[in-house]
Length: 289
Image (cartoon, rainbow, N blue to C red; front, side, top):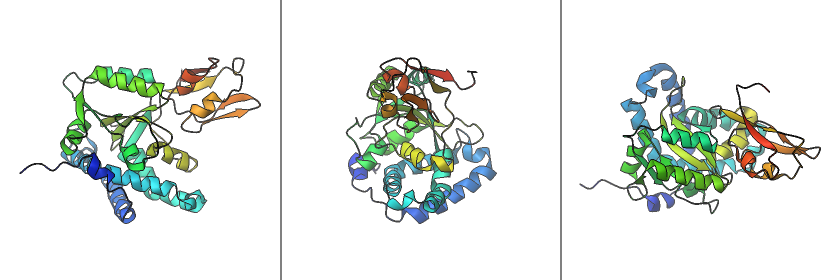
């Protein structure tokens, strides 16, 4: 019997929330308990249980993202009580453990791709967030699956994903960065420093659900895996043009007294790339100054 393919057409046709809240709440509670108490059988790189759960996530991904996009745009999410409730009920575990992202500079991401094992395959397909939200006109084929993610996404979505070389993956990341998209490396079941890398995302501020979640829940404590770099501003060079404020997808820049001020920098480096006065630079977080 032919294997069923759940391709782009099928996923685009069914992105309504429908009964996701109780299912997600129960599943995340169970996953949280299991991850804390089952140890490596649940979170290890080659664990059959983890790979099974990643495949189930891949199958549901677009529908889950559509639900979260719908939720984050509800007016009641502006209320402190609702914001805190959904953060602790859904977003905290989902975004900090189940699929945990790490923002990177362009150079870091290119080095990471170069360091992938020679025998591992890389594939590209449509951005799941843009499929779920239809929120922007950014390029669709920017979802680069790697390592444990490659076989799973190719198996489930053979019409949508195709194998590419590491050089092609780097080319696509560079092109996305030129368009102002944020390089982000995602891990599955991130506990105790586990790797479990499965996808390289090229995120925009209009459709990316992890970025939407960050902006919505950051006051409650939502965070990514800490990035290696942060931006600093040379106030003598800064002319207060606001370019860095505009390009910051995380809304962590502002103008104060006619100068740019860095808030909780997430480390993508797009402010450095786009500043017309070269007033920004990236500094390692473990460096002084």
